[in-house]
Length: 296
Ligand code: G1P
Image (cartoon, rainbow, N blue to C red; front, side, top):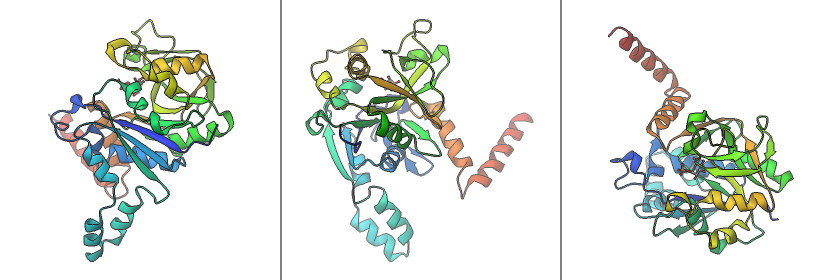
């Protein structure tokens, strides 16, 4: 097995939950303060040693490719105005050691189908990460970097998991595994996509960070659509569980569900409070808003 150097970002979803914001722009370009969700995910991947960034894009997603391209006109303009720091920052989003590869997914046929679009550049002995940008992950050590470190010694596929309320199992892939201590691994016995409350094998939900064995591409190739008519990544992962094995990793950090409006609001509030420039002002603004609520 080769070292982990590749990450796939499936970004071809339609983002209907965020209409009208996503009518003409991808949901992954929605920003928390001033940074698009997809940039958070790319920075997390780069911090984990990833050097091949593979984007599976769909219609209305060209702005993603533009976002990670060099922009010489903007660079010159910023430098002529003395804004070298911003110009340097923009240049460093994708370091020179990294390359970006783009695949088009013509139809949104499910997460498994999106991942399989990258098959032409993934060899069977090549592990790769999958990052779902609408899961915004905060950790003192970036979550994918935590996983990459574990993977160096385990060499096995890995799913980031967190505990959810029993009423929420229907929104996630749920693993059959014992709850690992934070920062540790536990072997996965099975996985079910979005089981109804009461029929889930546990309350350990998979969130959008995976490290997968390159052989999964072969498993996805001929896979029939599963529940909801979609080609599910979960079905192919089940085959890995029965084959070379899969671990659940209980990450250290916080996950914001930016695929939902309330999760997006939470992420925005948390990042505003922690912002080096605007944190203090945000705090007093929030207090004032809450006091005004109370006196209504
Ligand atoms: C996808 C996966 C699911 C996983 C979730 C994490 O679902 O199919 O297994 O738990 O991402 O966010 P989606 O949210 O795309 O419906």
